[in-house]
Image (cartoon, rainbow, N blue to C red; front, side, top):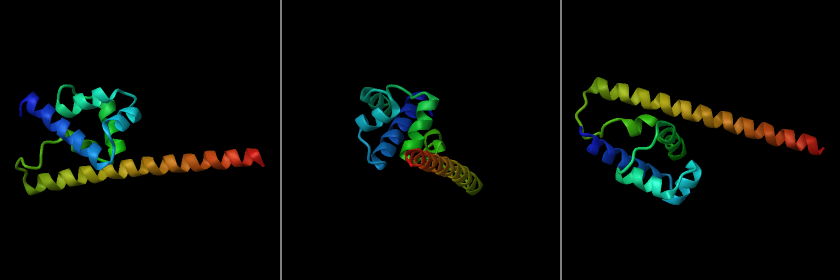
Length: 119
């Protein structure tokens, strides 16, 4: 696959993930700390996001990082390849869920700590 096709493919995946998460370009840009023009550039394939930005996009859109990096489903893949892909995506999802749970626990502890100080 050519670099142009890869950029367009990545861009369409970013756009699809953003829309699936119910975010506008401006909302996603604000979360990422970048301009909405940068988000637009990623989506149309004019620019490729740096790996840390792509990982953050993965997190805020609840898509595994591999979703953005792998070729389209339309490309042929054998059954063992599909199973390996699914296993990898499941491990990414488990990692993201664990991170979210840890974040929620930290937030709860901070809230409890603040309440104790007020008592």
